[in-house]
Image 1 (cartoon, rainbow, N blue to C red):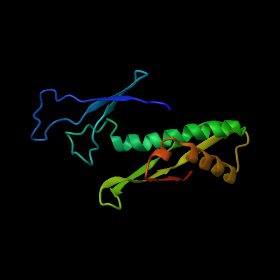
Image 2 (cartoon, rainbow, N blue to C red):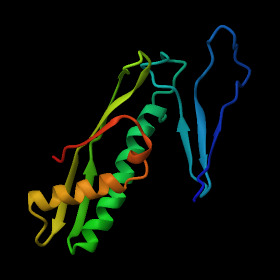
Image 3 (cartoon, one colour):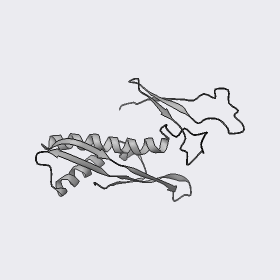
Length: 152
């Protein structure tokens, strides 16, 4: 078993509170020292109370799925003898009502574009690597939402 931590910190900084006119800006702090500005999504809480330049939880969810998938894909591609030069994913998450009527991330589409050095895999072999990566991804194995792999 492994344990992973993150510290999420928010401070009112003297703003009013009970009128809901306070900043949703906060920080995500990680064990290696990285600090990421976080906020609610402007689609959920309008500006100026959200911080548009910060990462919102919905974006982080999509990025976590994409990053996890990529890391497993790179490992499996290397093991298969393929040299990956560049991997870019324009991932998209859809937030909508779930079957029980609550809001949730109901679909995430990963859209990786991969460049190889030398001979890369054919389409079927690349999809097999994606399938293997998807089934190994800890994050994908942890969520209820459908995760779709749609290489570009």
